[in-house]
Amino acid sequence: MKTHANRFKVGGLPLVELNHLELQFLLLNDFRLAVPLEEMEAYGTMLVEFYAREVAEQHERENSGKQ
Image 1: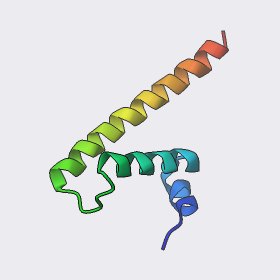
Image 2: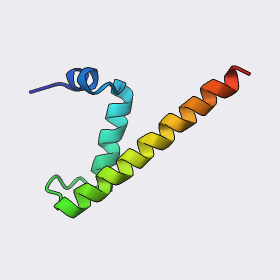
Image 3: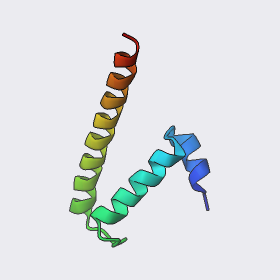
Image 4: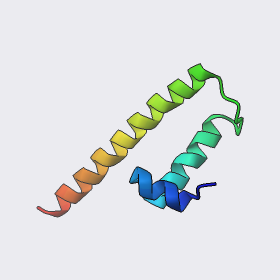
């Protein structure tokens, strides 16, 4: 079994972010681990959008600090 530490090294996500995303996944699915495909696809879309916003906000914070 892979640990979170191993997964985040492969995926490139910080471990804290991976843990946060995992908790969000569980909360959004009411801790149901047998999720219908349509819900999984909708969650995947939301996850990608969330991550894109997080990255954009991080870049904004970094760029505003350089001025």
